[in-house]
Image (cartoon, rainbow, N blue to C red; front, side, top):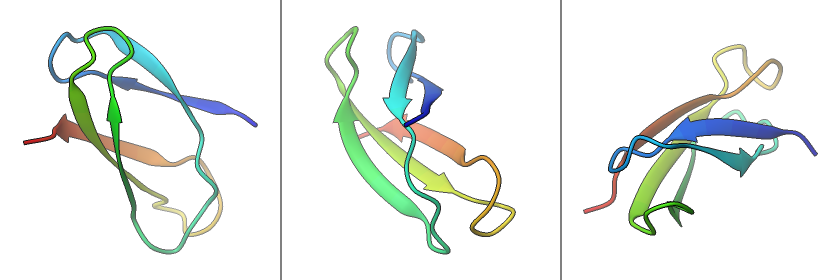
Length: 62
């Protein structure tokens, strides 16, 4: 399976995440940064529907 890259909103390090399966709905998950261990909320969506690359929105989990 491919992986995607996101930037931690706390330490600004680029980290790899497992690429999610395409979906017609947004997919949300919370994960810990593997560098600074702080919680990150990741929302993935597919602007081209079920095809193409996902877009990841990343924000601090509060």
